[in-house]
Figure 1 (tube, rainbow, N blue to C red):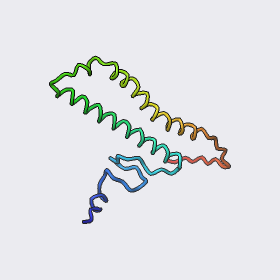
Figure 2: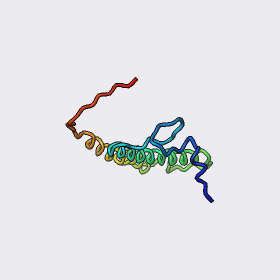
Figure 3: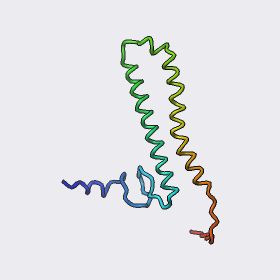
Figure 4: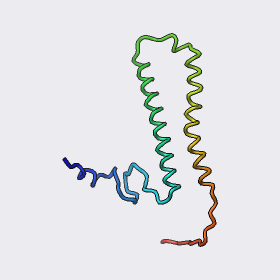
Length: 119
């Protein structure tokens, strides 16, 4: 069964490089640097989605749980985990970010500078 006809007219899925109304993804990159920035965006979005899903699950399970666990309320181990986990998450976001910053710091001396004005 061929379902490709559903995606041809969909405003949410675009196969072109042009920005259109209600497109949920980024445009196709025209440079390797922009491609790396898109990969970083996807990497960070994956981490944030995982965090939101985990926190939502934990809040929902604590809200609907009638039994209160005493170790959850007063525990040194959980406090240590709550302190170390954000540092690890920031590390996984900071390393690709710093790599991109150093890649973008490269100075090019172009042979030609072209200035255009459009109306």
